[in-house]
Length: 212
Image 1: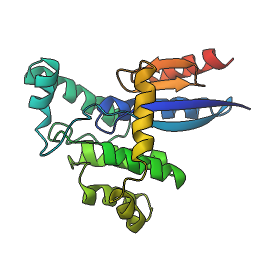
Image 2: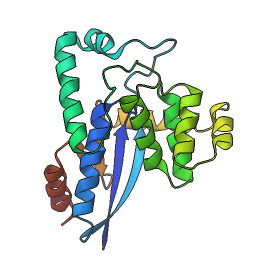
Image 3: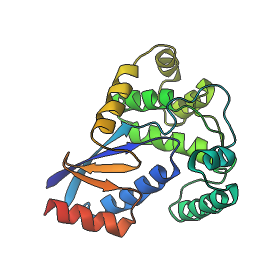
């Protein structure tokens, strides 16, 4: 059976990244009799210079993208509805604060070594969009580690070191240089780019066409 490598360039702070993966996951399930899949999560920061206290998300996005809070409220409400159909918890998406995701990306790299990178990513999405917790806070990060059954003591040591920091920065630079400017970006077999949170049927069609 042919293996398909999928590198997912994404940020924990990106709701469409959570939606995009949930749709891709359904596509992979539909294609399970035709292909095997290897998934790798790749780091990208939407707000790499963020420091200090977080801002409420709607005013922050309005300022960043030059749109009204009302427009963004409607967009986020639409995302909540889509997420619900996919079994994702987005109930507090509009109550979250902006935050730095660098340490969260380091944890995903470590979780990969433990065979649980996707579970780590999903746990981070859950607490950020579903519970409006700040994913730069060490206690929040450690709660995600415990939720997926990994060792919180090891994770705390990692967070208090610079472990995986160079790896995350190197990865971010690699995909920026490759021209990835928005996420999610799905890179198929290191050759083909699928941009954005496509519908499941679109993923199914694209994966078949690119690999048959």
